[in-house]
Length: 483
Ligand code: GLU
Image (cartoon, protein in one colour):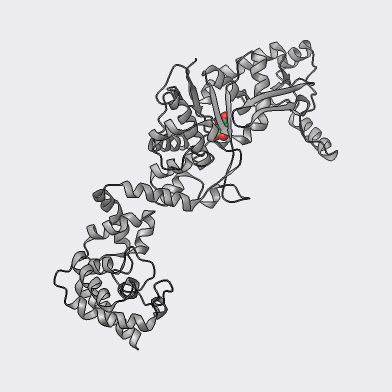
C-alpha cells in the first residue's frame, strides 16, 4: 500500500478557528496512525484576504498543540513549494493541459457581460451561473483573441449530460447531475489559480492520499472529481466533517470571541485540554473514556467515530476536561501556575499559598476561576444570614448560632492549629452534640468565608486563615446572627 500522506491546507487568516484546528488534528491523526506524513500547505491564492503575520499564527498554533508537520514551507520536502502562490506556474500549465483535453476552455467574457447575464438569470429565478457563452469558440477564434491580448480566464468544461459520483468516507457515495454544476473558473485573469483548481492540482502533485476538510466543500467536490477524471488521476479519500456550532442555530464565529484557539488560551485553558476537547467535537471514542493525550488519540482515532451531525461547542465540557488536566499537574507546578491567579485577590503574606494551592488543585477547572474562589481570604465579605439556611444540611439561623457558640471555645482551645488538630476538635464537638456533621460544618464554612461556594470545607478554610483570623470571623458571625 502507498504511504498515507495527509495535508492541512489553511488560508492565512490571522487566527486559528477551532474548526480549522480540528481539521488539522484529524488530518494529523490519520497520517500518524498509518505511520504516514502530515503536510502543511499554505493556501494564499486569495491575495486580497492576505493578512500580515498570519502564517506565523499557523506555525505557532500547530507547534504549541504538537501537530508537527513533516513537510511544509519552512521545513521543505520533496513536493514543494508548500506555499500555494509559489506554485502558480504549475497550475497554469495543468489548466492548459485540460484545455487541450477539451475539459477546460478559455473564456473572454468581461465583467459587464457576466453581470448582465447574472441579472437576467436572477430576474427569471434561475440560480446565477456562467451561461456557456465561450464554450464553443473555435480554436481560431480563441487564438485570435489571445493574439489580440483580450483578458481571459480558464473555465472547467462540465459535461452537459450525465452525473458524477464520488465517495466520501463519512457520507458514503454522493451523486449529482452534471447539469447542476457550474463551469467554474480554474485560472483567473491575473493568471492565479482559484482555490477550486489549485487544491486538486496541489493534492495530486503532492501525493496526498486523504483530504479532511469542512463540509462546506462537499458541494464543490463533484467538480473536483471531474477534474481528477479529466486528468486521469485517482482522487484522494475524502473526509468531510460537520460544522462546529455555538448552539442549535449559530456557528462559532470570530466576532463572538470564542471561536479561536487564541481565545481559549486567553481564557486560561490548557493546550492539552483544548486539543483533547477538540478531538471530541464531531468524533466519539469507542469506550467511555474521553481523556486522551495526543499520543493516545493517534491510536484511538477512527473514521467510524466521526459524526454526520454538527458538533455543539460545549464550554462546560471543555472546562471539565481542563479540570481533568489540571488535576494531573504535579503539585509544585500547579502552585507556580496558580500563584498569579491567587495573588489577584489574595495578597495576604501570612497565608500558606502551598496549602491553599493544594486545596484548590482538585477543585479548579480553569485558572481564571481562582481569583473569585479565594477572594474571601483577605477580607470577609458582607453576607446575609440567609446563607446559614441550607436545606440539605438542615441548618437555619437558630441552630447555626447555637453551633457557632459551642464551637468558639473549642476552637480557642486548639493548640496545634493544623488540619488534623482542627478536624479533631470540630468532630469531637459534633460527636458530643450528637448532631449531623453539617449542623456544625456548614455554619463554620459560612462564618469564615461569607460565601456559599468555597474551595474547601470549613475546617480547610480555618486552617488556611489561621487561628486568630478564624476566631475573629466566628465571633463576628455570632454577633451578626445574634443581632
Ligand atoms: N484553504 C482552505 C480553507 O482554509 C482549505 C480547504 C481544504 O482543505 O481543501 O478552508
